[in-house]
Structures are given as structure tokens and as C-alpha cells.
Image (tube, rainbow, N blue to C red; front, side, top):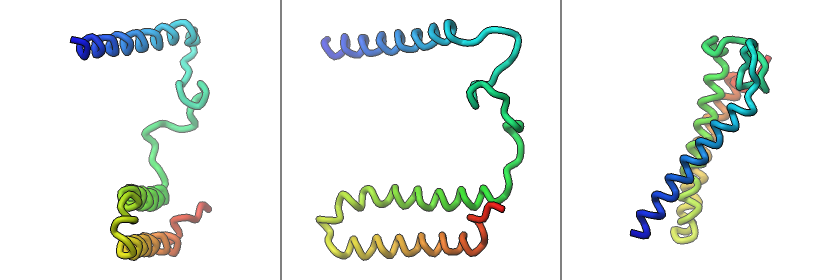
Length: 115
């Protein structure tokens, strides 16, 4: 019974928080006929949200994903490296070397040039 009451209390607290945020928005939001954007501190965006991106952003995105995957694999590795020993260190350097090949390729192809 205690767990049920605690759960109901948390749900009530969550509902009160959501209602408080909506009430604060109603009180503090600017009113008028001009439409403001919730982004860029209320300013108008310079281009439409569905505008096309330059192709160089896709290469940068792939490099970001490569480093993101690196972090996903390095966290569990860091937890077990002391138990596994030097073999884990060698494997991680091989993995980092493989990622570095991708970065060197992207650099050679000009993915990091912005002009």
C-alpha cells in the first residue's frame, strides 16, 4: 500500500509540475498579433525549416556518428579494461585506428573545409 501511495504522490507531483509550466507559459508568454518564434530568442529564422542542407553536412554527420559510436563502445570497455588486461588495450587501439582511417579519409575528401 505504501508503494501505491508513493506512486500516486509522484504522479500528482508530475501533474502539478506540468500544470505549473502551462500556467507560467500563459502568464509570461507575449501576447499580440505578431507571431514570434520560440527559437532564436523570439526572432524570425533566416530560412524555412524544410530548406535543403549543403551536402558537406552529411559528411560531418557521418564523422560525428563515428565518434559517437566510439564513445558508446569506450564506456563499457573502460569498465572491464582492468579485468581483461593488455588485450583490451590493444583491441581498443585497433578500434581507434580504424576510426582514424575514416577521419583521415574524410579530411582528404575535404569534409572539414568550410569555404
